[in-house]
Length: 132
Image (cartoon, rainbow, N blue to C red):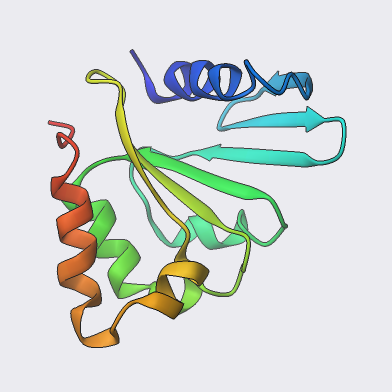
C-alpha cells in the first residue's frame, strides 16, 4: 500500500466515532480534510527534504512520511525549523505493516532534554518497523 492510500484510510478511520469529516480532497502530494470546525492538510512526502518547509507554514498541517532513519535524522538536524509551526504534527508510517508513530515537535521540545533529543527520536523510530 502506498503512503497516500494509507493516509486516506488513516484519516477516515480516525473519524469513525466523531463523524466530523465533511469532505476529503486527495491531491497529488497532499490530502485536504474539511471538518465541521476546522481544516487540516496532510502533506504526503516519503522522503523529507528542505522543500517541506515551504509547505508547513499554515496551521493544522500534518506531514506523513515513511518511517525511515534518514527522515528521523533530517527532523533532528532541522529541529528548529520544525518548531516554527506550533501545531505541526509529523506521522512516521510503515504502510505495509500498518504501523505509525506521531511527533508533535512543539510539545516534544518542551518535555525533552535537548542533549538526548536524537536518542529519543531514534527510540521512537525503532518502536515501529522501519520501511525498507
